[in-house]
Length: 65
Image (cartoon, rainbow, N blue to C red; front, side, top):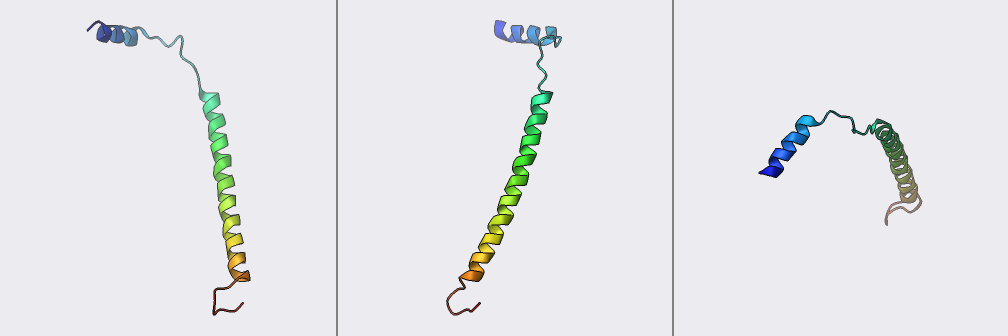
């Protein structure tokens, strides 16, 4: 029961003096995420082009270029 009361006291008395601001780190992570999404999109497009070129260079049996 003491643990529960201590948690309520801690929550009630918390005035934010020791809070840490992570906004700069969050912005850096968002920038990194955008770069990863862009790189992934480029990689998928390059893979699709490579696959299309390979299919064109090596047609299935019975098909011609």
